[in-house]
Length: 237
Length: 237
DNA sequence: GTGTACTCATTTGTCCAACCAACTAGGGGT
DNA sequence: ACCCCTAGTTGGTTGGACAAATGAGTACAC
Image (cartoon, rainbow over all chains, first blue to last red; front, side):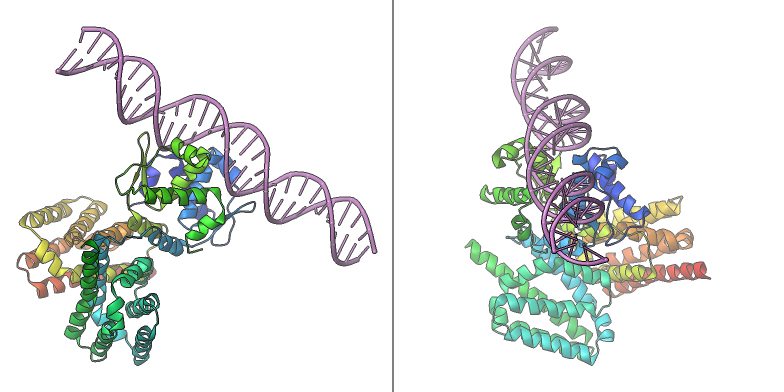
């Protein structure tokens, strides 16, 4: 289910066409900006009906692989990031407690575990930049705005690891993380707790104090968790 | 482009149907596990053709909102997380040194950072299972087979964390990790190094020896890295 | 020669009708 | 009461049709 290759093995004609179009893109060396054959040409090439091809194109479109414009055709793009982004912001009116725990658990592993990487990578300039973001957060007028700076703080911290894969994953999770932040952090941000915690974390980085950093970061992330739990309970009661 | 609501404003009939189905789910209070009306019913409800409904269903399927089973119907699910990560598993053709570093760096953060979670979650049964996998690995005939057991060992370790998102991410990375393993670990597995390292890690888990666990796991992962580097150099030279 | 307006083939979007294969439920026979 | 079989339902696929908008080529006016 997780592995897309299973889709091909699925035997569903549409999934097979999706796979064959992907292979076509690969073998023909098509890249971003190139145009795909027309739907009718694809029908002929793959000996299938146009509806099947169209459903396959819908999949590729949903995946952000192609951008199809009416009366013009399909061009290859790479909007996968945006699409993954879309999917998360799709219908998440409710962030389940389970989702919250998973995301925060993941963040805790990454952000506390990355201590040594961050210590060795952080320059004075980086620290100044992080402090500036922290300042902007506390000066933000709305919770939404403040949450964005909060997330930016953590994202730039992660960027210091220098691992693009991890940064990508953070990018995907952005909508959910933002929602989580906006939900429970109203009072914390206003009262300056988040600001002070960020400052303490920065100080730990400056002094390369691993123990302090890990403790502060963990506490920081779990503080949000506690607030979230309160919110949920207050909604329940 | 990023905002899904634009799809609805797009005017495309399919996108409108997608939006209306989402609204239907919301107003009817449908949740995960519930069944959607049949395609033909949706045609009638929305006064549209079946192809349009089907293309809309393809979108919802691609987004991980519904799971459609032939001859049965569409049930509501929430696999958005999986789907979002799926999208990135599209082009994993080449494993560059950079990709390798990033993946292994990610694994190091997760697998060493998860020590305490693993200690508290691991039961004797889990440990026995892991030992069995390790045995199967060393008895495997081919490198491919051995790599699969090697990955299974690590995956089951990660499963002990109890964080489905992380497990999903591992699922996505599976092809790349396997490629990495198959590439550089031939001699290591045959010589039993990997087996012994796994055993040592299990012993550290049994005794809840955090320091030993983290050291052994880090060394284990970086050993693979060194082998990979050798392979690359030998290919270059 | 140049620029404009027009025509027309092309392409995607949508719809319709039909058939297939598999699953489900219910009836009929034992 | 149990089993088998049949008919209806459902998603999967096909082929064909028309509408609307685009873009390219052409004819015409100046």
